[in-house]
Image 1 (cartoon, rainbow, N blue to C red):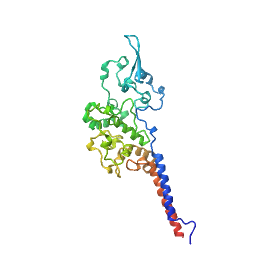
Image 2: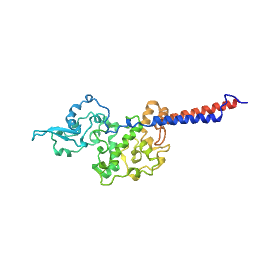
Image 3: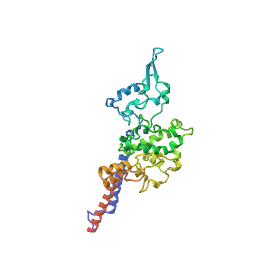
Image 4: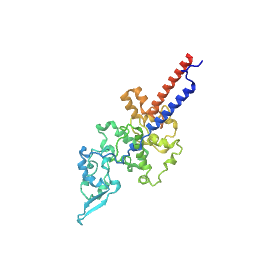
Amino acid sequence: MNYKANIRPAWVVLVLLMLFTLAFALVKTSDDTPAAKIQPETEKPLKVDLTKFKNAQENETCLKCHGQSKYTYENPESKKTVTKRMYSELVMNRDVFYVSNHREFKCTDCHSEDYATFPHAGNLRMETKANCIDCHGGDEKYAKFKFEQIEAEFQASVHSEKHSEDFTCWMCHDAHTYKINARTNEVLKETIVYDNMICLNCHGDFKNYQLLTTKLKPNLLKKHEWLPNQASHFTHVRCIECHAKNEDTLVVAHHVVSKSQAVRKCESCHSKNSILYASLYKYQVSEKIQKEGVLKGLLTGEATSIGPDKSNTLNIISLIIFGLTILVIMIHAALRIKK
């Protein structure tokens, strides 16, 4: 005897296939980071209201020349108005500067006040640039950022050991454009792209690379050809995860190691003791736990999936599918028993 309410195994399989298809579609649409949302530090952001910044008017003394591709002045000898092109590396984008970490600074806080005189004296080009520790070292206001520890790690890094004083903080962090990202950006993929672009500014740009060496620029794709699913790793993991020694007390590692010491074992990331928990996911997990508690923070945080192809959406959908599967099996079992 057959019952109309009886659910056959074929229907169970069909329902599960439909759920998996829906889950895949949702993951593809929700986890892809739109290119338009990723903003490198050199890209012009939305217009900024300069009246909000106390030193903006004084900075215009410099930016009326250095804030555009050309500048105009009156030649005191010929009495003529002259227009010149500004060197591209000396052009500062106002909008980028006023969303950077140093947006409240005056130009002369870091540069000599002698620059107020035009034409600038030639010897001013030789002035020593201040490093992070020169301003932030020993200051209780910035103690939580651990600048002294960052400086110590940087001095031990391969960059500092090979290039000594020629390699400064500003090689990676331009004082006019740099802004913190790992602590403020809620979209992890944007942080990854932003941080990797800092490395690629030299390692992916031949002109910048040869400012410190006469060697040919390395072929990054060939150097990493051993890496499975290479494109996915490049877009889902920061360079420093494999090329820097992580320090648990710092959000971002600064002790860059030699290529011989770089991580090359899959299990370093794809395991329960993933190094990504101590670096890439560390800040996101700790923030989530503080806001929502340990259990909920670990279950709903972005870092619950190990490896570069992690997906918070996939975690949630997987739990839903698992629950629905158990429910279907229980209903099917109950109907079979009833029969």
